[in-house]
Length: 327
Image 1: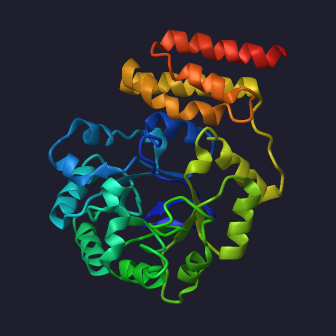
Image 2 (image 1 turned 60 degrees about the vertical axis):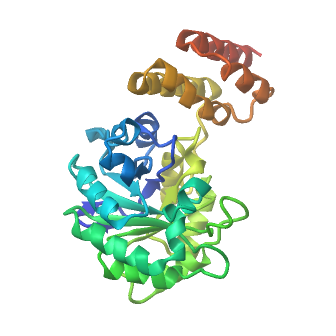
């Protein structure tokens, strides 16, 4: 049984990665229904929480059906991160997760996210102070290093464990790589095989199908897998992987008509949570993923993203469904 603190996760848990503007409550609901064992919020700015910025505070919304659920925070100031930890802990998640992996320029170049990989002593000190600021288990999501010359993740993981984190998720790329090239899991395996490591080690990067998940499990000896982009437009991936790991059976993806119904459900959940204007806007990033594999997908997506009214979007989606279920 894999555990984060006292939180039991099963024998080989599948985690939904925190993704900005993706892993919101509507998407998390679909992934939970699709078999995810643990989920994390979008990353939340520590400065935003301290200032009670609406966007940051809204990301604290968590629901009982999601448990176990982790709230992920990021920032570059230790005192702000301590205060944000206390605020996040007050809404009673199961886990506090620290983002040391976001590679985007506006985050990393300010010393937050993956930017802290350029200052390992500060990373360790910040983690220690966050652990002291909450009674909840603290976990970390990070990368192999800043670039190919600074892949210190084996040492870093051990130092973070020594100051009190209770699990670590490692994306198999450096910050410099962003999301390019193939994820390298060899150093993730080295972290897991370090005889001094005793906390769960989760691997992340390029898992988009059951066979790949099986390969990562067998070859790299991780305690579980975190899935990010592979779940977008594909929230049933967790159940597919679970079935394959247990029996070797490949479950077919939902039929096209069922995918359309899931997409419509996602849209409705998004609007219920965010309101029509924002719900419609943020759903646009998902259409091409749900419609993946269809002829004329670019045309359909182009038409969908130009519509601003919920009911008109429903009409357009039903029109697309009609085209491909009667042809």
